[in-house]
Length: 202
Image (cartoon, rainbow, N blue to C red; front, side, top):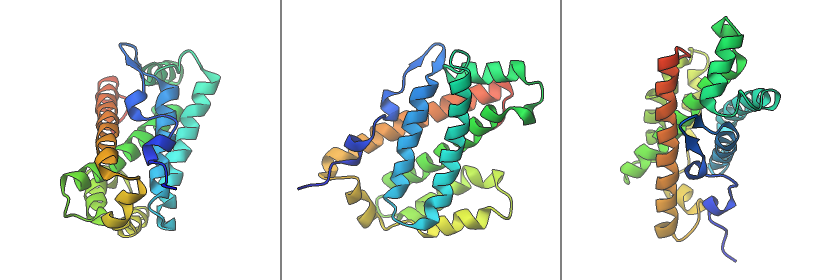
């Protein structure tokens, strides 16, 4: 029996995250982000645990804020505004910091996959290295960078990875592209929100 396609196994896609004038629905965004982490499970290499742990740790912190503040945390935008209003010092805003790092991690992931899709002759390790250099690298210190570069080297060959998303590829790849576009749109939107609100840099 054929394995189910990856996008049939996830509980929430970025294409399904509600975005209104009030902003991006926090709970739905977090669920979609949790499902994104599963992609790294398909990479089949323990070197990526550091990436997975980084994402899941930040998801947990934002989810904790939402659990305690279901109304003010309803959208990413309201969460940021509420935490800024209630906590004067930026360094003490745990949820804002976690969301910032989560968005940075999502940007890295989306860049790596997008670069790879746009360059069919390029291996994932090269694409994700470019994605890292275009996102997380500038925020990482000298101790962290080698850990991430090691993970980049551990990327599977594209001939191994893409079939793991499911078959036929003619069905799966358009789903991946739609999922990626929705993710990138959210990241771009929040980059603007962070910049405009003085919350940090994605």
